[in-house]
Length: 569
Image 1 (spheres, rainbow, N blue to C red):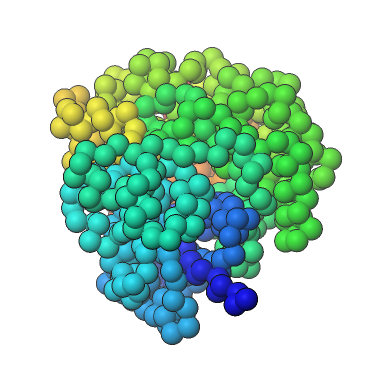
Image 2 (image 1 turned 30 degrees about the vertical axis):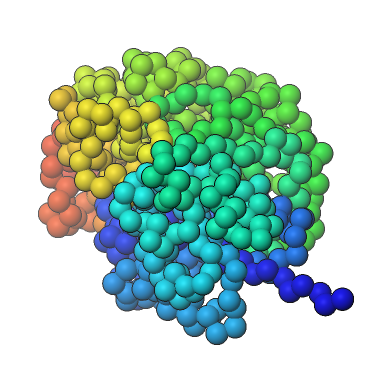
């Protein structure tokens, strides 16, 4: 009996941000220098969706699967001299795959709105290289934007788009004698023909996540893939290599700015804790993992489960990072103490807004300012460093709301703030509202949380863009909680992190000058103050200094009165 050859699959991940953002990063972006040129920093998170899918498919079928994540490949370049990402991708694939690897199925996974154009252009390049391969797309972009892709001609490249999670739909595609006939019949695959007949796709979820084997981490080059530059923002962690895991799927909340429910649904589904523990042990044994990065959309859904997982992390003496998935009302003192005992010294807190009216009505977020204040104060008592996420510029939010948030957030003692512009993510409620009211300017499918695109009768996108930067400047520098509480070393570490990325940052230099003066280092303070005066002129800082009603001190002796004087208002 002749053994049937393995089917070949190629998974591709386009660059997560737009080409323009990469080659000309905005002032509020994390950047790196390549051959003297400043470019945006790319997140190289492990692509868990594809690793899960590969493991599930190989459980049922004999396959040869390859993975290329272009965030990793572009990050590895010493210089980027291409007119767009697709040009590099096409060259890379032609050099590394075309001659000796002819995939039966190619899947492109696109998660984030800024990657939309890269997703489409990569599809065009792939179809030119492998015209006979069956090309499909999946992830947040195809799930939420399939109508737009259809209307703008994207199906000229893609044979089908997957709706929601892809494990079961992809298995059906692989097993089908005719992939085209299968996607035309399946309720989870979207094609141009079906959309002409007003087709409405449906999810096909795996209910018991333990049906998915240990994720296929072997697809990745862990020397590069898990070395994530974003981890440098976690001040409490020295390990720059992290291994991403997801222990659950789904989220029952109705936050208006989120679209994850479109992919994973609102009903919670879990890996058993025994399965989670087995996976972690295997990551440690096979890959030497010491730092775990949890990627659950709603990690806190079951308190007893959370405490059990944290107890295991404590027992195994591992590090853990929670980039998302925390709900503040669930972070009582008992739970926070469990995080601390597990060695979790830094948490990302979704404060979201400093206005209770916005939290309740514009965000539909079950949160009050008193809870935000209590959680951050408890974290300080437990010596847990906190990064606070805040969002401004939603439809229905007013300038008065934004000013109220600006003042209220100064009273929340988080260590560091990450303030972003509301982005009408396709599939979210604010996208629906903003679209219906004509509030969106620019290309929303290419927008990210650093770029304001919503204009309402009460504010412009330009105003939100300015205020987003002012919030960051005030909360992280001028009214920095660690400065005001006298925790100078902690504050200085944050300022130095900023200067490592942006040496010309006036406020980071000014606040480090303040620290030096408090320490009695007049010479060091003078060096930072000199840079402030240099960058004020060359860096366009006057507009933001005026908004904050702040003057650059004329001498070192004025640094402390200038900073502390603002705290009295």
